[in-house]
Length: 483
Image (cartoon, rainbow, N blue to C red):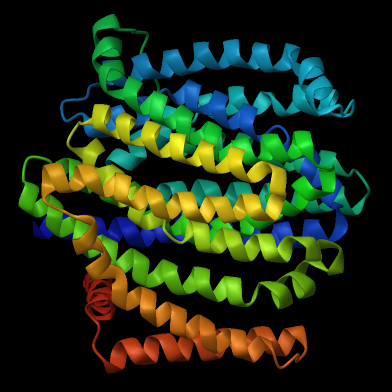
């Protein structure tokens, strides 16, 4: 268990470095490019988001998680998945490429035809990265992934900023994504030193697909739903409104989705190692539930409170229409860690059937909320996201209570201290914003006061979440010092 603990801590550390160094640089690049480009440029690329995301899920088809979950995986398994990924990516690339005129006709945006044909090459590029990335994830090797991602984001960022500055408009965004995926995929192959064998096993395919197929269906549901908003907004509203929504969505997801991704990438293989011991699974679940919400809640609440000065200072006044959307989306996405950890339990136990059932129910709730709110505009649609996110907490917890004795009440009890502390911190920051100081001063004071208040209260009252986070940090530091 000591080895497992060290592997987990090391994995969290390097997964955090990989995610936040890459996303941090991308965050700066996003701000620089958003100051140059127009909301319409981002709206144009966002119109393709649902097609790219759904096709990417089809390419993976749940095989990545199946490889991680399987204990007796072999090189035949890896090669089988690799060849499947390549074949399906070629087919989907051709579908998207030749459907470009239909897509531009759907949105009534002729310029989208050429953009779609070039963006489609991302599908081919990403297919080559699936197995090397899965292999590194199995060994909780996020240090290597960090090297590849960090190099790729710097190179693609330079290309994107230069093209935006020299007047290429939407093509700056297109070339940035292509250069990032291309560089990252190439480096994953170089660093992982993995090469496929000339074997394809139908038996291996069937075994992996029996687990992955449920994840594929649930992934399709989740991906289609998450991108359904961009599809609807792009169809029913002006391109600049989709631009506002897509930027607000990206900024709101930055802290929550990235940290949840960090936890998920590390916790899933760890849960798989102890999948036959429910007591250990519960211990892992509760510890990461407390730590993840302790970090994510204040980030999301703080961003919501400071959204107006943040947007004005970094994106300029032309993006002011994104402020209210950003505030609402922060409140919707702050629950990501809770949703994710509940579903990871089901996956770790090999219950992809239950995972699929949960996703279907949640998406039905989400679609109903979307349909009801469409007539009232984009802002109310974001309110609907908050309502559906909260309702889905119960759906997630229903199955974890049934199979692991982890009820929603027990989960809420564990995260309530972090939630209350975050809300009180957000109230203090919101009052500061009302003084109408300069945006720079407001942001500096808001972040400083928020951090001091939150960590100060947590340390003063010796909150369990704080002590666990400190213990994990010290254990990682001591481990590295002893090497």
